[in-house]
Image (cartoon, rainbow, N blue to C red; front, side, top):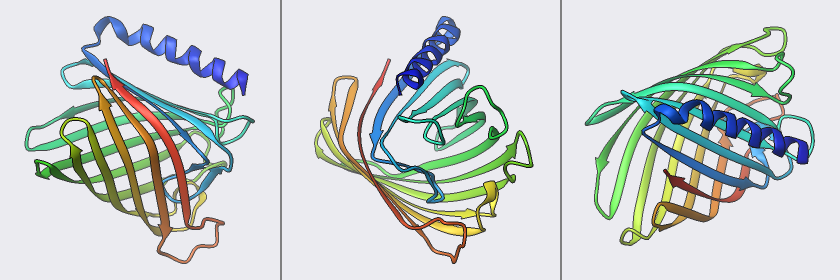
Length: 239
């Protein structure tokens, strides 16, 4: 695990050094999960993982992003994703990004993927209770078609935030419905998702002492996936 952590730290340092000169702002999050479950309810790793996400604004709505996942052993708990995207919009927020997912081992490309993501969201209610609806389409192109199958995933989601203590404590939740056409070797399926967290904000920092993710497969599948519950904790900050 030490080697994976050192590699991830090195990548984070290189990422900051590359984009800091033109950066206008940024976001960083750190989470610990009891297992790594993918959005389609697949079990990538059945032990705790450390996951980070960093994004830096680089001007005119463009941003660079970096996701890392670190596990205690080699395998699909280890991952480094690099992305470049642009977000814009007033009433409706749009986001388009291209990502390169380096999965499992940094020095091998057979399990890697290119991912195109199109996303749109709109806040429909604001105040002590805020509600945002959104839709996302992801298209996958594998580096080696003999390893993965390409395809797409489309997701509809609704996010709700309930303010418990003004500007300090909030309860966050999201429900989603995803359609997978059978990408990455899985069976075509519908997957429902539910996530929630308790968030305490102190200055620029937000602490999540408890986070929960639930996935439920709504279709009959024979690829080993099943319903999952994942528990975690984390923090995030802006800079």
